[in-house]
Image (cartoon, one colour):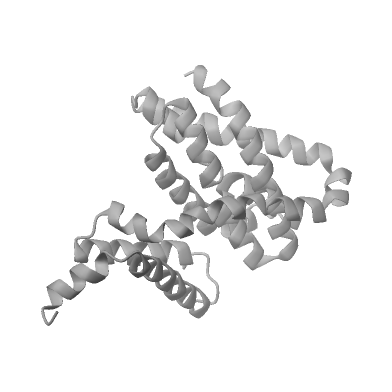
Length: 237
């Protein structure tokens, strides 16, 4: 095993290598995020994705090989999604007091996310399979993948679109809401949770605890609503 190429081939075949690489990439992204003063532009997920893409490209490792090692992180998405019920329970009284605005914002936000994406995609002539992959992009990954599979979409493409949506939302949410002078942390949190799922919710928690709680609520409720209305909206296209 003195040949570095043989050593690398052996290590690359071990699942623990890519799980460790994933955690290390996110750790590096989080360090840069903190060093930037928690700037939304230095999103740790985006940095981790770039680092992993470079490593996989240089090493010539296929995504399938990588995923075999990192799938434990994917598995944890399910329990993490279930945990979204906690902020909903903790803020139940506050939600009851603002039930009508929350439901109205949820419905408008969910419909806007689905319809706008499908209209843009249709204008570029994308086929039905791609539309089905795109429709659930603003909900959390486990739910979005399930919706895409049921609608005849491509789950892998949906996962990528969900990731890009979350990263973009987390980057633009703070400056955008500041520009529109939205000061209510409940409204800010709900907006980013509906539009940018888990990555946006993580960003909301970094800014304000109340915003993070309502982002989790928006993310969880939007997952349920999208599963209901995405198939109905897609039929119109």
